[in-house]
Image 1 (cartoon, rainbow, N blue to C red):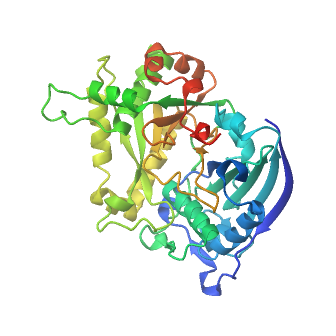
Image 2 (cartoon, rainbow, N blue to C red):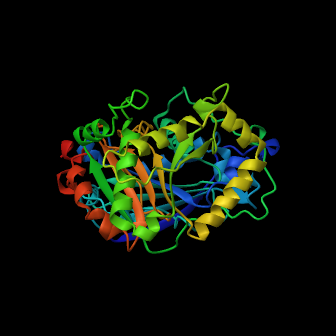
Length: 436
């Protein structure tokens, strides 16, 4: 897939940011976030395929972005020293590019590494930039909007808050959510000497593959991991509990030597803290209002993996009001992650991390020409990172797996994994077939 950048702009807020808002202090949760861009790519067919009236889509996107940035003003600023955002209206990097293929060529059988070409930045090349956008125009007239947002200022929910807020501005919505900044009051920043937030980031040798699990296969896994012999664990696992248990078990079985299985194996789950705080925070609080739950699953060879489901569930349950208070105090948690980073660096710990975008508003971004026909991620820079995303119809789950180059062939050829994965060629999750 050939992509040629044809223009480069800096889009600034349509109204200047007031002087009293010129400095946004990063919260402790922002400070410990990985120094990477989070990517999302939204795909839209051409006007002729949707039946919408023809508009100059690029001009419409630029104008509405400028207007939206008056509410999301820190995104047009620059990050400084892992301490604050200088809200100086310097602007959002905005690229336009031509893609020398059809939209359907990309979304019928997506290749994660190709999707990185539709993004405006390398994901680990973060610098001071907070937000960058690339609008890609296909030969058929379809569009892909690639968004990169700095993890130093946003978690996944905040990313979608911005994307959907921008789309609402483009549609002319009058009832718009205003993001709330200033999480440093809830999670005061800390002195971060001796802490490196980039542990686990690899600049190369990471391979990303996308696997589709249908609703029926997910239901089968949920039934498989329900422990009917135990009253305590008889509750059926959630979709995410079941899928993460299955992916983790197949990763261990397919890639690890006996020596590696004797290391400390952990499962990490990203957790939204907004609903777990006391009182709960509204969703419009913008920033990193998230943390992670760490489970240490049993390494027994039982096929049912009941112990894994139970340990994951318990770890997530422990992300509660008490946990949030310790996080707000900061020092103990900072020492914990410093020590954990040392263990990971020494390869004393083998960790698999999961983040779920399921039930997030992935498919709501209508800029005036309909909702996206497909929303994709990209090839990420972390090893052993798994991202869950709803399929277009919402009944299945796309699983984006990022592994070291030597591990992926073993994992993707695992026979037990392949029993549950839907063939990509048969996947109709993009919904594009409904439009042509």
